[in-house]
Image (tube, chains in turn brown, green):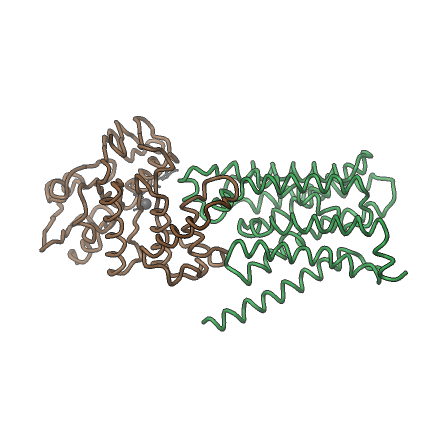
Length: 263
Length: 272
Ligand SMILES: Nc1ncnc2c1ncn2[C@@H]1O[C@H](COP(=O)(O)OP(=O)(O)OP(=O)(O)O)[C@@H](O)[C@H]1O
Ligand SMILES: [Mg+2]
């Protein structure tokens, strides 16, 4: 059974259609990258999967339901003065949804939280107030928070944002390891495909109401992207990187690299 | 009368018990109220408790019940009318002003003793009798039990609403339940410190505690300790010189706040 299954899914706000006729099955252990310019409906797709946004039509099914989902939200900085330490944030991902105080099993809980924090290299600042942490440090705790609950489905909304190259690798390898060892299905929204390209099984590319699903080779080529953007787009492979040139001309920049290459 | 003689008096003991119970409830709720940025909502709710109390005075029913009804109505109104955090302040402002006006109107129509009127605004703990005390203890117990049950998801929803929603936490419903709990606690505090000074018990101790620790558990424990010291200490200090209880409660709690701010600032300088 698929971990995620969308059938004839359509989402529109008023008469603005974000996507329509979307059939998508994500298998356990699969890594799906979701690409597209700003406003193309990537976050909205996550909200649909989380059950926060009803589909305009079609069906959505998540194996295991809401509690099986780990979610790394699109980054918003945490309140500076918040009385919350890194370990509290991560702990909420484990059992923040259950009623009562949860006085039993505190030892085991602590071990799991510590392990999750250590896996993102966050032990050094686990006891600091989250508000004073850097954007990248907060982001790594967010990943730990999503993983600590043993999710069957992992939804990451631009999780590499504000991470330096070394930590981009730490986080994406961590997510990769997770899906290999625990068969977690991963939906990974990103504006930068290259850092995760070796991990990606399939790509969902959304542009202005149109979309394409397929392997990176099937989607990330000049013909497909030109069709999606309805304007000539050049896709160049340089060693193991994909450069997209020209997509920025009609939509907002999708890739930093495209901006650099175009200028 | 000596200080110890004063402590023997029934009404003083009732007042001390009331203050201790209130300190516990206000201290536990405080950090959540501050985290959710609801200080102004508490103030608004307490004004409506005043309105309810004034209405009760006019109708000749117990002030405690009137205050309770007023603040629960206020809490539900706030929960329903301010769906978005961004317009909460203005909704509170509008309701608060209207409620205060109504309260003053009702007091003007009331022909009884004037001290009853003043007490609603500034507190009259020495006037708490045993029926009031029963109401206080029972309602506090209910508030604490409900809070214990919803505490974790409520805390989750308060600090990290996006992820909490994604984990199936009923964020919207919890915020209404919490508003009602705060409403009940506010109505109870109104009797002790008065509508104008509820913030001294519910906000100041929590704000002080959150200056000196980043651990939610430690912040709650400290907040309870501070609220107890302010409430019980304030009453004890007021006995001998015969000063208003509310003045001393707020003074003690403000001193604690200043000290904690100082400690917090010092610590930050040492760390950096
Ligand atoms: N509740 C809503 N009501 C109306 N329009 C909405 C709503 N939520 C989102 N939209 C619109 O839908 C579009 C898609 O939004 P979404 O957040 O999914 O984009 P995105 O692909 O995640 O973009 P970004 O790359 O900037 O994060 C946007 O134009 C947004 O204005
Ligand atoms: Mg988005």
